[in-house]
Image 1 (cartoon, rainbow, N blue to C red):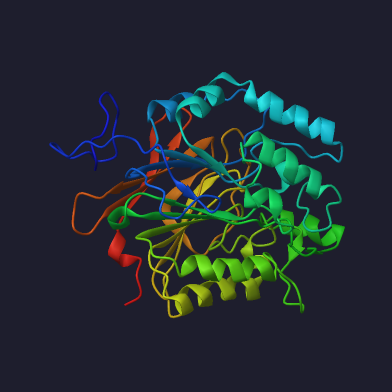
Image 2 (tube, rainbow, N blue to C red):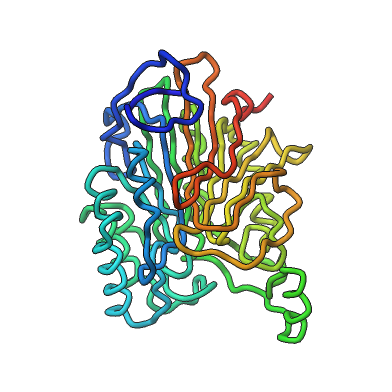
Length: 366
């Protein structure tokens, strides 16, 4: 891979590879699309960081000196309707030394999930979402004229990084603001399902059931038509995984199909999903007659949170799973004609726990 910094354990670094300076600028949908930027080749991401717990994981993250860090939600555990309490929990995250160092030297972008949005598994019905959005935008440094502040439809946004020949588009979805209510099983049924690591919810195909809402869908179509070499879609919930009964795109099969159909219809190349929420890490792959090309979903969760079990997932890649604290790495070698991408999860000590390599041209309609 790309040797850009000394003293680091690189992902398959090749001797004599060209050095690059870390990117410091990016285009955002509140800035001109022609804003210059450096090449981005190392992106780290994670989710599920409880501000009340120790966070030693920032040490290996900072040591890797990423070009960009993506927060995929549950960035704090707010779980409140008291906005002073929510603000206090953001303040506590801001005071954590490792996070402070990351923020000082690394570009950060974020979306939210349920716990920093407001309440567990909540969607459009959360009554304080407007004030929660204001706190989110304040904490993550959105400027006063940011579209995220102005729009009345959540916090979805997109970014473009790098020159044309190395351009990365990062699309950050909002799966909370417009998401319709979930369908619950009975308490007794959940007791039975829980023994198989199944969750309390059922899929719905009811008319009007949605993850994104129509405005966000129309915006997303426009984003997928923009030119880019690699498109990272940040989804706070798993997209590919079957994840039975828990929050995921699988609870809204029509919406999941709509996403795949939209990728096909727009001829959007280079799509790679990243996700959080689960409290374990894994890579899922769907590569069948229903997809325009192999669709990967790299899940990293959590930065502090873990879970006692892993739910069944028909799309899980063998060996690509980990159940303790972790973060994700996307490393791109732009120095070869067909860019090489390494997806790797690391533990709290910074040690690799699984890895998947692929070539960029695999993420393209054929």
